[in-house]
Image 1 (cartoon, rainbow, N blue to C red):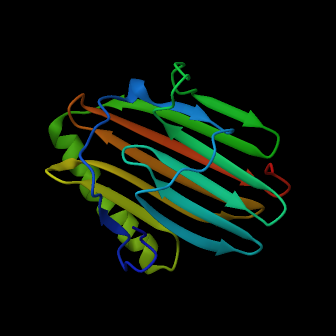
Image 2 (image 1 turned 30 degrees about the vertical axis):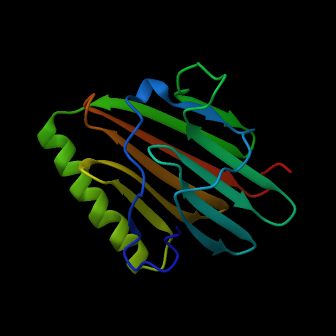
Length: 179
């Protein structure tokens, strides 16, 4: 399933909601790209950014034909360390935060993400929001934008059963990537 043809970028994910908390998420720049449940690809100059939803997890792949960077935030076998708050590696920067929120705050955030991703897509920019069947407050969302000397993105992962929201930001400036 891809979101490339969807005007709003909103996708009902055809899988049950399985992740249980933010503590299950790990971070990697070396994991291979996985088959996504939904994706949205966009060309920024010579770079293609691919927003990929892996359920309540994500991958962001940036490829310029010579270099590829693959950021993965997911339940990764063998990686038990919590998400790092910050990773800075030359031309790449990643931040993450986990916050608690009550049901009202969660509902407001999910509503905001629906509008934000739809507005982003309406401007011709890549955005994706995945919802789980029977779990209206469980969503994974991602948006990307061109920034002066690179590409930046934000993601949100909501965990209503633990009242948690994981927010990440990433940026790859010119000259970055691996192959």
